[in-house]
Length: 277
Length: 289
Ligand SMILES: Nc1ncnc2c1ncn2[C@@H]1O[C@H](COP(=O)(O)OP(=O)(O)OP(=O)(O)O)[C@@H](O)[C@H]1O
Ligand SMILES: [Mg+2]
Image 1 (cartoon, each protein chain N blue to C red):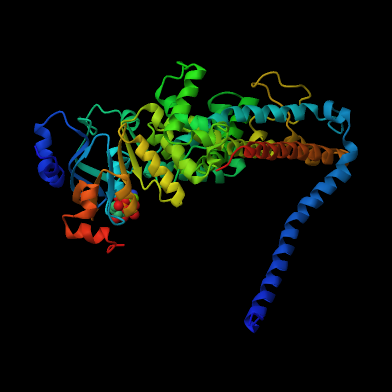
Image 2 (cartoon, rainbow over the protein chains, first blue to last red; image 1 turned 135 degrees about the horizontal axis):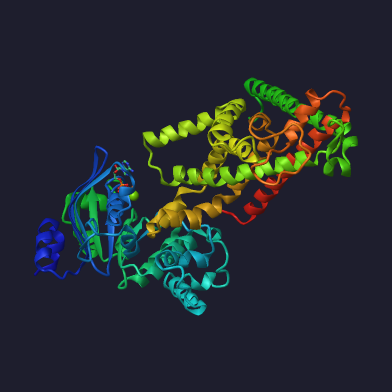
């Protein structure tokens, strides 16, 4: 079937997806509605996010991008007044199902935030933190294996060469750019399949932004990456597909190149050209 | 162009005046402390000797040393801590890290605040009723320490909760988002960063407990008992009560004796406080965010 049509018309694609069972999609949401108390932040969000590519999520401030991301790894429900309805399926499993263990959801779906939030422990321990909470503490890995894990994770985020001589130093002493890279690196040892990034570069300068984008391309293909950004140039440079949201609704979901050249909706065109601010 | 206007100079004068005024008030605050300390040193200093610290009171407590009271106070405080620290820290962790924000939690918090405001003599009466009589511990170190523990509990809880809450929320979120349970988060990240604050709070509390008189007077402390306690079911002398007794209840006590006792009590407290400050500095050194 025609893949572009599937992406372009989110509503229909959901039905199509159900028929073509083994999906090419990592994240499928169906009529997702989210309320903060009485305020509805997402309206009937139906999206199919493809495996192993980078999808960017753009839209004006307050349109619900973070809400969407936070629903996917179920951190929104930490707030008692949040209500969610509709379904979210990750790799064909309903993450709001009855027998879902939150720790497993969080292990599969890593999240990176706007402000780098390394833990106040050593760089090495930051990288190993996920492992230490998801493995039985009695089963100690041999030292050289652990060293390999640390090196690999830091290599993948292009941080190894700058920190390899100070792995024992506090992570909070690193520069913001390095901290953000470390926050990505510490997700990797527990082998997530999806990485959600909520404006990961907005606390960084141009050089840092470029460095993080570079590492994202390096991770592309191994992880399904969804990145929220306010930076149009970044969405354009660093993603395969692009989703445009407005006031809690999905307006458009197309390959990035297409969205930036021939947006299908007037709102999209307006936003891309900076008329929303 | 940048010269002071009339308004500027008026504002500056006003600020200078206020500054001096507040400085004087701060000075007034330190004055009593200085006077107390110098008086104690001057009048009590001559009383301090090896026999004074390590001897028994003799001759109707008008001579001799304070060793049983010194040891008794250490017993009372130590046993009280044994109860109040685990209980208080656990309660604080529950309240700060687990409890949902609802009427029940608010009620507990309110109760803690009120408990902190209960006068110590009321605690003493409660201690007599609950521990000495009802639980039948008799007048003993156990009953007195439990009374002290109840009294110090709110402070331990509040100090612990404050140090827990001083740990940035972002650290907790970072852990939870990686799939850590609340307890893993507390044990691995929150507690290690809160421990210096908790310890400081506890030690400051210890020094306050050491000086309490009312709560132990009816529950476990004895006027005169020149033996060292052997178990928590014994009665014991205590510094604070001893000071009260020799200053007001016993005739013919030489002047320097009560001052000596007070000096030792203050010294214990100061040593404890300096220890707490040193600990805080030490634990602060490798903490940065
Ligand atoms: N915890 C919350 N409680 C109540 N309302 C919230 C909460 N978080 C977000 N909202 C509201 O939900 C709407 C969507 O917020 P969200 O954070 O998802 O927007 P966003 O697209 O990520 O915006 P930004 O680009 O500024 O990050 C906003 O109107 C916001 O005010
Ligand atoms: Mg946001």
